[in-house]
Length: 502
Image: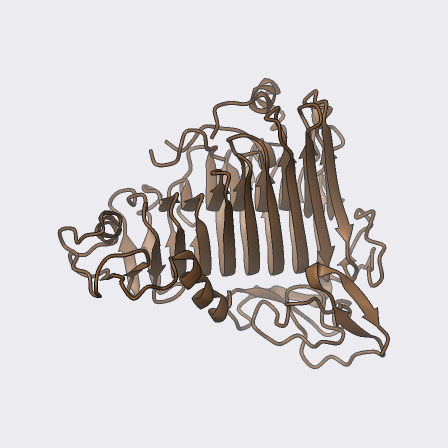
């Protein structure tokens, strides 16, 4: 099996073109292009790139195989007859567009794309559907996702189902850039669901930028929970230490439910007597998150709740610190519950549960201009924050194609989110590509066009800050404790440890 045993089951056009040249070795003219057609199937094309030579059925065009080869997938459906070969060399995989170039796992029989330890890989203009266990897995490589759909209809699992799962566990620095990604229809029974995981371990560092993303229709039953978009350090194998810096913007999450702990947006920093710290810094801007439902924890985790935004940390070893700083601005939250009660924010320091002697520091911080239908976000008392607003859902349209690459929920006339935000440096459009005004943009992923601003204006500030301008590692100690707490699903939605895919 390709995924290492230490692992756990568990951009704009400009950015894309610039990033491809960077991660694939500078854009050398010495590169091969393989066109998937006839006898040149997708598996044979991957084998050819891995070998650096044509394999039976494929004949490359271009000067020679190099460090920036391309596999071109035409419109139509590529139905797999076996697991795709692991990708072991840098490559750009380009389709003809979402829902045009479709990689079909044949009714859940076969694994999707798997990549490990390459300089870089690009996935562009593809749909992956009906896969087994995992649609796209990337290990210790720079990666770009652009215009990707993960359609989990007819997907199957062996205990957990992943949409996109990336991990950096080689002690180096890596980058992830993701834009225009739609993950949906993960409907399983007794399975952990992980829509989009970005994980770090072994002292690595990842810079992640995720924008224009939609998650919807994600459900599981039984004692297993859900990770939506998840930033993790130390929870998915290897030495539990490292750093993850992330920016997430223009994202819609809706209709996500489980009968256990549910964390649509979450960050978890874990240490485990490995001698280092785990740190996550994530800035979240212009998010619309609605209709997400989970349950409260029981037993040792009584008092822990599901939440639209979730931060958790553990410091097991002496002097070890697990830190999460999740900063949220310009975000819209409604009808998110834990055991039937409103729950937009939840934090958990799990150090005492695991008998740790270090520190767990989970923080959810407001940078202002968030609108929610409850007051569960204790620190959302900054300028522009509005809590206990009761007409959010009634002034949102359904999730649908409102233009742009991913579906969104439109703001309807009378929405409290219209013209209620502040500009954030670098966020100039909404999830559809519609320009956001510098003065009083809308809150959430969707920009209401034609709104009239008040007198206040804004000065965009880097890093999500806003200012007014009045002009697989084998089982660890943590896993052993988790395993001993049978029937509780203890934080399984976010920090379970389970050996790799079979």
